[in-house]
Amino acid sequence: MTTEQQPRVQWLGRWGFVLAATGSAVGLGNIWKFPYMTGEYGGGAFVLVYLVCILAVGVPVMMTEIAFGRRGRGSPIDAVRRVVTESGRSSAWSILGWMAMLCGFMILSFYVVVAGWSFSYLWKMLSGGLNGSGVDDMVAIFVANNENPFNLGFWSTLVTLATMLIVGKGVQAGIEKSVSWMMPGMVVMLLILIGYGVFSGGFGEAWRFLFSFKTGSLSSEGMLAALGHAFFTLSLASGAILTYGSYLPVRSSIARTTFGVAIADTLVALMAGLAIFPVIFANGMSPEGGPGLLFMSLPLAFQAMPLGTLFGILFFVMLSMAALTSSISMVEATVSWLVDNKGITRRTAAWGTGIVLWLVSTLAMLSFNLGADWTLAGRHFFDWLDYLTSRWMMPLGGLGMVLLAGFVLKSESFREELGLAPYWHALWLFMVRYVSPLGILVIFVDALGIARLEFGVHWPWLLAVLAVITLIGELLSPRLRRTLAS
Image 1 (cartoon, one colour):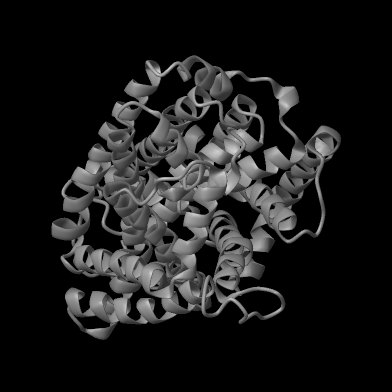
Image 2: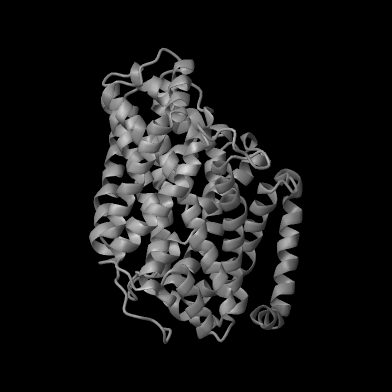
């Protein structure tokens, strides 16, 4: 352990971390984005590639972040600084911690607006405000919901208040206690919706759609989407997992914990598909509904179902809880840093952060109404937050973390922290040095539009590049370590 490490509150058990980290990972990305991406990119073939990418890129990067957090026992900034100092490297590397913390805060600044959609639709379902005869009616409801700044601002403010209330109570009494019922509650509601789907007439079609692995149905664009979603769905490079890792007890296995989170995250995503697609198929709708699948197509389907209002309420309660567990994780890095470095109480840090968050998120919210004409280079403030975090900060932060762990720091630090058998440690080291960085670079290049990869044509070249980079890296790694550390 580092010499600067201070006593730090910890999760009551490994399952506290698993539930909190899974809650961070299981957000709107799983229940909102994963189903419509699966629909757009060919069903089961997309799911298969996504699972491979989770193992090849997501799991190694998550293990690395948790190891950083537990070794440094602090916010992303403090944890990275302590770990690099322990290895005798430059504290300038702590810029990766700053980037992660800022990234999480910026994501949350527009995420609370999206989360507000879930809460507003829950209220509409309870009050009968989602009645419409067709998709055009649902589009009109969605547009009207966003065009009213007082309405949209109210719901995003509610998400901010709920988030800060929970985070302000602390790691155990606030975060761990909340996710200990929200995550199981979410799973129970998913199971109820799946149970209905079994008897709805569309379950068989949904099952075949999700698990029929017809590789010809997946395009190169779909494979890149699977790779990108595998990285982003686990809340990597946003400070959340690293901060949660700082509360992980020493006796807990990082490898088992990481696989537990990855499996739970993937299962919830697949369960969401099994809950949503039977309803879609049973009502003769297209699974390729895109981002509007949840907020336009599903409300229509619920109207056509027996007990549709009840199932609609269950669904949007679950969606709201998923949004809230993610928002809690994204603000924790900032609150943790303020508590550790500014000598203020957690409650004060939470509400102070909440005020700043509310101001920034209000600007993001106004992008849909009063500020619709406020653009810079063709993007609204909301779009800039999304663009900078998803296309620049997260890929660069994740790349920096794995290269730092793989080439710069003393291998003894991670060997001790991870506690893996020699052959498993060698596999992890190979993944964070070569496979994960290459995967992140592919995401980065594609997201920026620098080049378009056609996997059907270019996959032999990618394997060749990986082999060459591995050979050069192993030959030059001592020199590369010294250069990067200087």
